[in-house]
Each structure stands twice: as C-alpha cells, then as structure tokens.
Image (cartoon, rainbow, N blue to C red; front, side):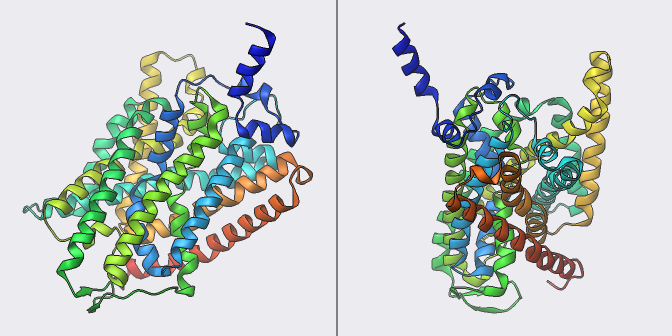
Length: 445
C-alpha cells in the first residue's frame, strides 16, 4: 500500500470530534492509543447508551409535562441538547493530558479540582449508582404487587420489594464487570421502545372512552391542558434531567468500545433516539389525559391485557437495569479493597465479591422499603444528582482541564448558560422535590 493510500485510510477513521480537537490544540491521539482496548462495536455501545437512558423515567414524562404545561416540550428539547453537549465534553475530559486515559467520572473531578472535587462527585456519583437501583426496585415491587393483588395475592408491597431484591442479588454476584452486565442492554432498549408504542396506541384508543377523568387530586372533570405553569418548571426540568441521567456509566461504556473516537456520534444518536421516545410518550400521554395523567402513565390505562403486558415488560426492564447501576457502585468498593491485587485464589476473591455485592443489595432494599414513592423519588434524584452530574460538572471540569482560552466566545456563552440552568434547576428542583416527597410520606398526596 502506498503512503498516500495509508494516509487516506487513516483519515477515514478520524472522526469530526478529532478534527475539532486538532483545531483547538488538544488532540488526544496518544491517549487513545494508550487507552484500554475495548471489544464492543459502535452498535453495541449505542444500545448501551439507549438502555441506560430509556428506562422507567420515560413513563413519568407525561406527568412532568402535566406539571409544566406544553412548554415542557421545549424544556425537554433544551435538556436533550445540553445532555449531548455535556456528555461529549465529559468523555473528552478523560483524555485531557493527551497521554493517558482517566478511568471514570471521579477521576476527572480529581484531575480538575483535587480531593474536594473527587469527594463531591463521588457523593453525587454514588447517589445515582445507588439511587437508580432503589428507584427501580420500588417500581418493580409496586408493579408486581399490583399484578399479584389483582389475582388475589396477599403478599404486601414491602415483601415484594424484598423478594425482588433477593432475586436480583444472584445476577449481581455472578456478573463481574460492566462488559458482562451490558449484555442486558439490548433487551432493555427494545423493551422500553415496545412499552412506549404500546402505551401510545392504548392511550389513543382509550381516549374515545371517556369525557371526564379522575384528577391526581381526587376530583373528576374534563381533560384540561395548559400552555405553561411557571412555578412547576424547575421541578419539571429536574425530572427531565433524571431522564438523561446515567453518565456515571458512560465512561465505562466508552472504555468498552473498540473505536473510542466514535463516541461523539454514539452519544448523539443514542440521546436523539431516547428523546424521540420521550417526545412520543410525553406528548401523547398529556394530549390524551391532560391534567389527569399519572406517573407512570400506564396507571391511566384501563385494566386488561394491554396494561398487564405493559406492566410486565417495563418491570422486567427496570429489574434487569438494576445491575447496570449497582455494578458501577460495587466496582468502586472492590477497587478500593483491591480484591484483584491481594493474591487471593479465585474462590476466595469470588467469596469477598459476593459479600460486598450482597451487602450493597441489602442497602438498596432497605432504602427502597422506606421510600416507596415513584414520582417523588424520580424528581428528587433528578434534582439532587443528575442536574449536576449531567449538565454542570462536565462543563466545569472541561473548562478547568483544557482552559477557558481554548474555548470560543460563543461556546463559552453556551457553557455558562448550561451551568446556570443546571445549578438553578438542581437547587429549586431539590427543594420542591423534598416538599413533594414529605407530603407524600405524610399521606397528603
């Protein structure tokens, strides 16, 4: 092969992101070469992204739109654009020094702001790594309880939560790394897509069967829609933020990729795909049920085969999504304990790993037993953690590691806007979400 042909082949492999890096003087070629060699294809990485994002939060978006009004769709579009941009910057931060790749999110925080940065991000990081499984365990227990109760079961909600936790302890112990857990991602992505389409079709069909609807406050009246409810916009933004949360896992997804330079395109198409599902589910649900839409939306569907199928599919998805988040948490603990460097036999190492992972599931189950409020938990998690992890920190870390002087004026203005929106949404949304959670816990909702 001639030198010109070799150059041509090389240029074909260089993504747009690399060209942009060259123009800004931050090409990470050496760091990519020194990064761990992944085996996942671009298609597998795309499914991983979609599976992490398109979870149970999708079915809560119609209620978020109810709280915000139709303007919530604009907020959703804004959150989509911010999530794409911030997650591209987060992965670029892994290669900031041009020589070696950082391993995960807290490492980026430490590189940018030292130990205080690591502590802060680790707190938020673990609130998602633990909070996600808590939320999914609550939803799983609630769904199974509702289905079982309809056929005469007397097992309580808390008992179902404990049973679900016990069942999921097995795969969490068996699967050692994220690569093994990621095998569940294709099912998760397809399951959510199927449920969204089932809910959309069922909602449209059901719209012909009622003139009035039971509202969340217990009243009965005609379906109503509003353009905007300003006081609810912050907590709605928090809910949308949760729906784009999951970037604590993205460094591990990118690490598993064979072609890491394709990350910008993978995250772009992955987020656009789930956003299309979000728009479809949120707009249809709110259009049909208006101010009477519930969270999750399939609670609005009439009892029968359609609702049962939807409940079963989404329950399987969220149940199998628990290892995606909890494995990330467990790997941190196992790395801190240095299990792989203690010279233990495979059996002894497996035993210690089983103990760590069993204890983590017990912790998740304990939290889930005391906070069985799906909608309020989703808003609180989104406001407290995802707003900062998804939008604010990646931008701040990028500016610190690469320098403000390497960012154009327009892009800097965009970054400042993202940080302001992210912080404001997190702060106000957290206060509102805590109030709603307290009201629900006291039985006022």
